[in-house]
Image (cartoon, rainbow, N blue to C red; front, top):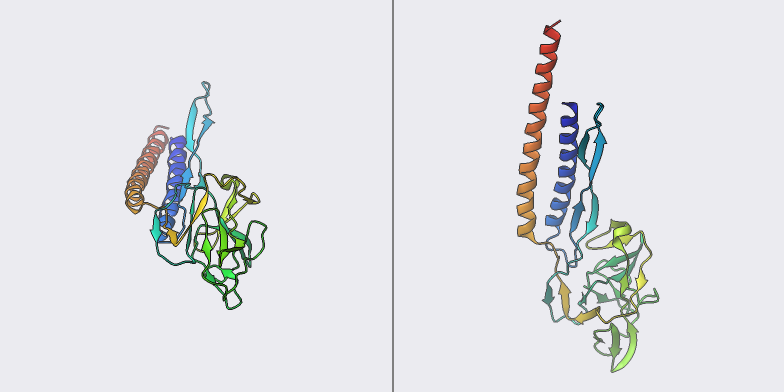
Length: 244
């Protein structure tokens, strides 16, 4: 009976973890460039204390990972709005260090530095801040990220890649800090930039709400199972205690 309680408890912990990620996804359904969090659960087998060594299946607490689906492109017409096509990231220099983001809402400072919505410098492929000439004409950016003013190349948007599955931390808005050091994208055949566009969050609100309902029902079911197991355990104790 105790094994049933442990299985139920492990399921509740896993479901609570999934509820947290669903809540975070729904809170960021309108966050530009946000990539939703998914959770992968693994089955763990434990042996019961009996002669046949029966296996009991538990659920792990789960491992978070980012959905790699691209969000929809939203045309803004703003020459300093950028969206990435493919699996890559922009990089910005923040007080916490270099952060990857797919939020391409950039602007120019009074000195011509390209910055994020929070005023953090946007970096080129070499990790340097991007400097433009405020009087040099409207910047035009090609699909390869090259920035031109008056038909002259003046800078380039850095596009970076990293294996997020090796570990990451969320940062402000849609930013992430990865355990693996990001690398500049060298083969841009499947990766590019669209000027005048922004990428919407890749969170599907209806899907998340549906999963929220399913997880809540599963949690209630596990709670009911725990109560039934506890009641059966109590009855067994009373019965065995009264038989002496």
